[in-house]
Structures are given as C-alpha cells and as structure tokens.
Image (cartoon, rainbow, N blue to C red; front, side, top):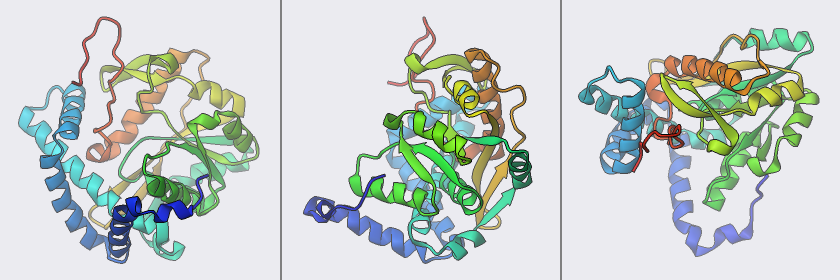
Length: 304
C-alpha cells in the first residue's frame, strides 16, 4: 500500500498538485454539471488523442464488424465522453464524505451476495474495466469486507491517491507483484475478492478464447484461484446512468459450473460473462485497452 512521502512536494510534482486542485473543485459540483463538462472534454480528447482513438476504433471494428465506419467513430467519441466524465469523479472517491457517495450509487442484485454469504461460501467478484469501476469498488466496500489487486501507476502521487481511494473503506489492495497468496488468504478469511480478467497480459499467462467473436488472449488463472479459495465467481459491473446522474452497480448471476478444471473452458465462460457485463454499458467499456495485443499463431498484429 503506497504511503504519502515528503518527496511528493518536490517541484516536479507541482503540476500534478495543480491538477488535483481541479479534481477537488469538480468533486464539489453536482454530477449533472460534471456530466456536461465530461461530454465536452471527451469530444476534445477524442479529436486530440489519435493513438487511443485508433485503438478503440480497431477494437470496436473487430468486435462489431456489422457497424459502418461512421457508426464506429461515433461509438468511440461517446466512449471518450463517458471516460472523461468518470475521470472527473475521481475526486469524489478520494475526498467526498461517505454519506454523499451513497447518494450517487444504486445497487442491484446484492441479495445474491448475501445469500452466498449466509451459505458460508467465499465469493470472487468478476468485473471488467468500465467507467463505473471505481464506484463498483466503493459500493461493495460499503457493505462487505473486500480485497483485490491493482495496477500501480507511473505518477507516484496519483498511484498513492488511487490506492488510498480504494482502501479508504477497509479494502485490502495488492499489486500483481504480491502474487496470489495474499488474495487466497484474504478470501479464506471471508473477504470478497474483486478480480478483473479482461486485460491482455500476454501469451505466457493466457489461453485464447472468443471475445465478441474474436480470439482473445484471456488470463487463465481465475479457475485455479476460485478452486484454491473454494469460491463462487459472481460477475458484477459498474456503470454511469446519465438519466439519474449517478452510478449503478449490478450483480449478475454466478457463473455455473465454474471452474471446469480446464483452462480454455474456463476462459470461454469468463469471456461470456464479461461480454454480458459489457453489453450493460457498451460505450462505457475501456475500448482504448489493447485487447488483442497478443495474436493467435499466424495472425497479423492489429495495432501499429
């Protein structure tokens, strides 16, 4: 868990602190206002960040080949708008009172988690990278003891704030370098594990399975983790609701017959569950990730 350091006051971080002042300002505003700002900011970033725009366009074109180029471009722009909108809400996660955070979160399906708890079952929450991911963590942590891995960020101050934001309600956070032993121990102690399996982490730790009809390198460890923890795997997705200016965190049905004992079969079930979550908020998924960086043998690279 990163801790505050006096080194963060070095002049090289002053621009970061200036940006955080803006984040704090936005955290004081109603979400209906930041939503309008996020829309304009997203349209601007979509035009300026050609690299990420093209990655998202490639991903969406691969997953939805029936869409025209104009339709895909519109989807990418909308995606950037949702991303920027959620980015402006990070200040809420870092500094807003818990009572205020509760007002912005609506939960659905948590009764299923309660039933598993009453049955004495350990739970792994399978989720994916969406605009509501951070609020998903908050929603779960408000009601349950949780744990999960996180990916350290390059900027040390932002890394500290993100980890602190995820841990402010008692969630235990680990980096991938910590391995799976702390997660297994946390699950056996009764904590809910929050796990993301949608990134392409390379061929060494993955198997290929269909993802919106495209063969995708899918991390294969979740089945073994679920077996080690004696846990049921429950998909859960967080997304922004523009109509009510708030976030929805929705629990889906547990993955039946998981783990199967075979990595490819497990990966197929993971991707089916992930697709279902993404379809809840298609334009809010992080299509800017290099989802198909690792290609099956004989297939050409998609990203330049």
